[in-house]
Amino acid sequence: MTIRRALLCVLTCSLSLTAQNRPAPTKTEIAPGIFLFTTPAYGDVGLDGNSIAILSRDGVLVFDTNGTLAASALVLAEIRTLTDQPVRWIVNSHWHWDHWYGTETYLRAFPDVRIVSHEKNRELMMGPALAFNRPFMEQQLPAYLQDMEKRAAGTPALKPLLDEDTAFLEQKKNVHLVFPNVTFTDRLVIELGERHIEVLNYGRGVTPGDTFVYLPKEKILLLGDLIVNPVTFALSGFPTEWLRVLEKVDALDATTIVTGHGPPLHDKTLLRATMEVFRVLLREGKAAKMKGLDPDQAKEAILPGLHDLMVTITGDRPPVNEAFKSQLVDWYLHRVYEELDGPLTDAISKIPPS
Ligand SMILES: [Zn+2]
Image (tube, rainbow, N blue to C red; front, side, top):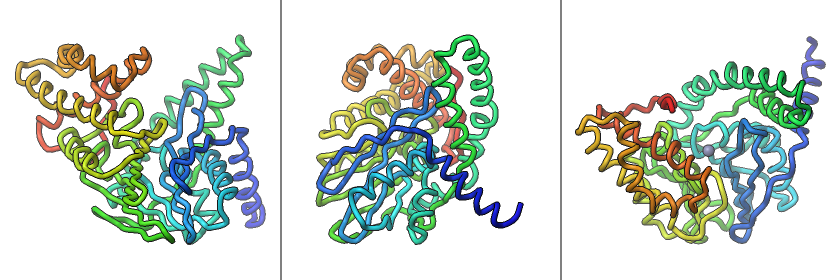
C-alpha cells in the first residue's frame, strides 16, 4: 500500500468508524460550565462510562473518554457546540475499557492534549488490561455474534441488535489505544482558567490506580467506578483499602457526585450505603471463612442481613437486585476471601464463576 493510500485509509476508515449512526449523547449541566455526557448501551454487549467536560476560559478538561471512538467523537462534537476552547487535559479514571478507549479522538483533534492518570493505571492499560479484554474480544464476543447471526437468519427482528453488536466489536478492534502521557502518585492540581481541579488517588479501591477529580469550589466529585450508581461493580477490587478510600472521599465537602455510570447524585446516601455493604461483607465474610464456609455459602448466609441496604441501593427493582447480589456482593466477597489469604497484588483477578 502506498503512503497516500495508507493515509487515505487512515482518514476514511476513521470517518466510517465514527459514523456509526449512534444517537447523540445525553447532556446534563451539573454546574455552570460542567457537563456530564451519557450514551446508550451498544446493543446487548457493551456500554460507556460517564464522560464529563469541565469548561473554563482557558481550555477544557475531559474526565473519561467513553469506550469507543464513535462515542467520544459525538461527545467532542457536543463540546465544540459549547466552547471554542481546546481540550487541554484528559483524565483517565481507571483501566476498564469503557472509560478510556475513546481517547484517540481527543489526541487527533488536540495533539498537545495532556492525558493524566495514576502511574499504576498507565502500567495496567499498557499490558494487563489488554490481556484481560482479549478473550472477550477475540473469542467470546465473536462466538456470540456468530450465533446471533444464525438466529437472525430466521428472526429478522434480531438484525438491528446484531448490527449494533457487530459495530461495537468493530470499534473495539479498530481503536488505536492512547495511553496517559502524564502520571501522578497521590495528587495533581490543575489550575485551568478559573477552575481549581484536584486529581487524586487515595489508594487502591476498585482498581490499583483509581483516579478521581475533586472541585472544592464547585463541591463536585467525579469518582469513576469507585462507586457506581446504582450498583458498584466490585470485580478485582481491594476490599479493606477500598473502604478506607471511600471513607476519605466521604470526608470531602461535595454536593454533587458523578459516578462512573448512571445519573449524578446530589447527596451521599448511595456512597454511605455502599460503604456499609462493604463493612458488613468485610466483617461477616471473615467470620464465614473462619467457620469454613466457601464464598458462595458465605454469600447465601450474609444476603438476608443486607436486605435493607440492598433496597436503599436498588430501589428493590428486581434486575438491579440481581446486579447487587452478583456484581457487588459476590465479587466483593470473593476478594475478601482472597485478601484474607494474603496481601493482594495489583494483578487483575478473574471473574468468579457464577
Ligand atoms: Zn465502568
